Amino acid sequence: QLQLVESGGGLVQPGGSLRLSCAASGATLDDYTIAWFRQAPGKEREGVSLSRESDGGTDYADSVKGRFTIARDSAKNTAYLQMNSPKPEDTGVYYCEADYSPFCDLFNWRAFGSWGQGTQVTVAS
Image (tube, rainbow, N blue to C red):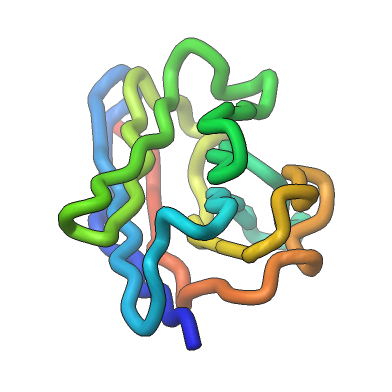
């Protein structure tokens, strides 16, 4: 069974950079659609970025396009979210999620079969 562990969160200044990691075990991450979601206090979990295993395509929320990049490292069985020029509104708990289905999308985090415990990201000066 696929297990995911996020890391790399912390405090970052606006305009800085941060890289989140999602280490997988129990299965090969290359076989899964991977996504990053985030949840701010008092708000619903929202999709940030997605990487499809079926065609290698990626999706991004409009709010992070041009600033965030999702990537995979097959050798390390790990996914990443590179956050450049973060803004205070990017603050929240970031979750890595994965599912074997190529039809999962950024609009429904509950459709994914696996997710980690989350890592806190705080963007503040």
